[in-house]
Image (cartoon, rainbow over all chains, first blue to last red; front, side):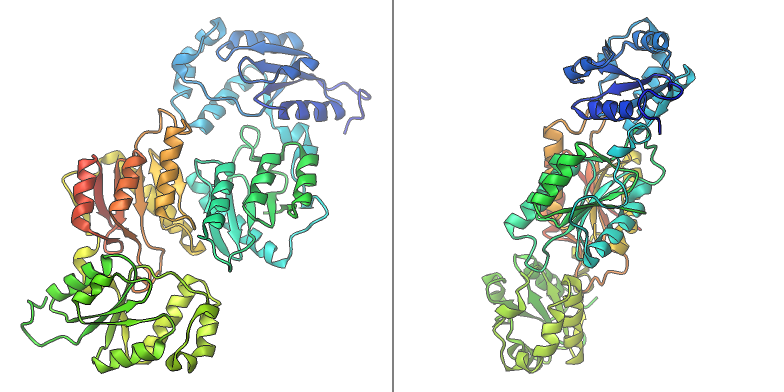
Length: 285
Length: 285
């Protein structure tokens, strides 16, 4: 790893910033690793705090402006970090750089989210900008193997984690389910389009309503990418809201595929999990 | 099929009645098929309307009374129809017939729902009472193959049905997921412990909140038993509430594994699905 600015300077690294503070965490971690982050803000999505770094603001559709900015900086690598609300193609305001690619872009927008991202990545790479993943430039933000805080999964939890990991593996080919809740060998919830927070709220509701009985306490949240998922484009993530949701759902802990799940605000996640009596641990598939 | 009371009289058939009117539908259909139903009401669960048939009331735990009643009637076959709230073993008031089997029963109550049912069925069979499924004695109440009403699935729906059936098959070994919602190849929801109605309400919520976009209309509810599931003990079922939930979720229809999903109040399901613009169809696995 590079120590600060010492050694041969790595080329500047662009970070296309989605919503929230996570792109800034990634930028800070990349800088610690000796990189020189150049932040791309998306009008209407990115946090104004990105202006603490060298940056450019673009509107969605300003493809020409974006490529010119990257080229002007000599950027050869870019990470896409954080969620950007998917626009409808018809709502895009295309600049000249986008109009030149309009037919191709229109095609991409007929695809699902993953297909759209794969297509956009291909356009960047054709222009000489390699897409890298947050896990590559900020490895400290990725779940490692083993317990992250003072609490560790017990033997029963380990069984639930292994069971959940197998379940998510079986769901992979259906492009659904990066997350499930398993309690003592029983599947309490499987995530599909609703998202992890809604799934956890459902488990909390089932517990409050008595649908889950006395013999079904605890449970573990298990989260992993789909098999073959391109982690550069779309990586599962948890954050403090996930920890709070898991606590409300009465779970015993969170288990994350090691090396493949991002932790937004890692310190806070670990601290609040511990305070709530939950473990957070990485598992190897 | 027997025509009424003609032919050699079939031995009386007991129906252990869970909640609601469905046990009465099964009794009526069995009688049409030439059987002589004897209804077992469970105090606190069964509908008082079972008294229109020869019957006996038992409390959960009155195992001795139940076996005596079955023996007195010469019953050799019994179906368990409709949900009975699972009691805790400690809450049972055991009669002498139960006390004799208390150690065995206590063991069973440590199992999951399915294990408990399998164990109870084994006890009945040991006493000479064969457990039969509602689908065997009231086949008219089971989803047949093909469209049930005037509306039929289109080509896109058939693809979603096949996709959903494969998904449920893959989930089988995890003892989760008898039901899913698939729309144009995307999995919108997978049922686990929350039940079908809650899953459909979730899809309706996602549509109302804008989480499902314009490009994700329609969708099909796909319902099937787990592979290897003993249909005599636990059979997937839909009813008018399922149809109403599917309509609220904006679905195009309901697809049921032919021969393996019960339809509570079938006429009303078909009528209300049609009125809401939905198909109901059975599919072959």
